Length: 352
Image (cartoon, rainbow, N blue to C red; front, side, top):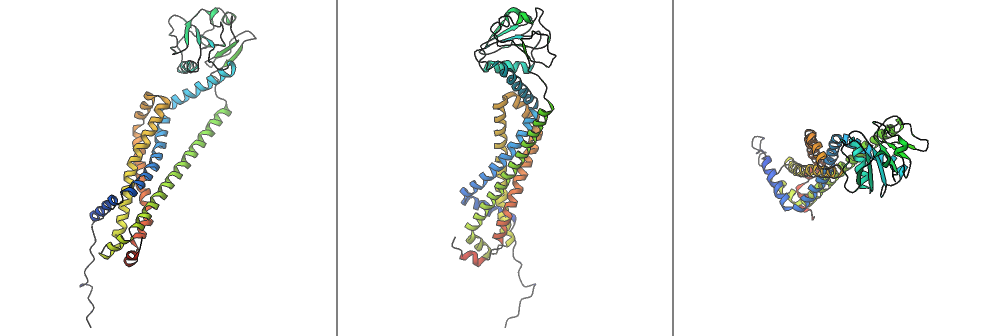
């Protein structure tokens, strides 16, 4: 009977370097390129959504003044339209003795876009009149500013020297709309004064704050669900990859591959999927968000906000990429464990 070999006579099993595992992974990706593309696409969409949310936050903060201006203009228009009706085909008057504010300029631009027919302006010769595309802008005397007008807008700087009775001569509706937050002028009893620039009440502020909280909660919930779906998708793809490679795994183990090598191989493959999908997702999410904000707010404001928040965007992109790598690795832990613990004989007998 032959003597049992001593521990010094038993050869140590060779541990393959990580470079070999990487080569095997790359070969497997080329062979199963279609499945790899599907897995990368799943990661791409998840990270693209995450990056689009981050980019939207940065751009929204950069465009906060523009957003506040837009809210103010919409509020002013809603008050005005509630009193005068839709501006299409109507005539309005304007009394101004100084420069218009950005909000006032946008109000007249919106009225122009909604089909205002004519704007009759009382203003000093030094004041530049609003430039509108389709609305006829005409400089008139005080007794002509209200002719046929459904409302007279006043910037609230200085009351007309001829009095409000002269201003409303021949007007279609006796509506005086104040575009700035000033005290009500002394007008005739039949003139209805509308404060377009009224400050928000405490109740309205509370509603806006509640709406902001709901939006933040909704964004957080959507991000969580999208990342969970991404993890599930990667896990499913890696499990399918293990199932398809039962014989390959059994053969490698029969040839001396350690369980650690098989585990490392699947983790490397998943990390590569996460890296490629994360990089593409960061680019797609960033570009999509910037384009949406450019369409909504204009090219220059969105570009300025992007450049101003470039540092934050880079940090968010790195965070999204790290998130992609971590999630991809976590998603592959179970499939890699299943692959590494397979018995070679069982794997070789598989008919899948």
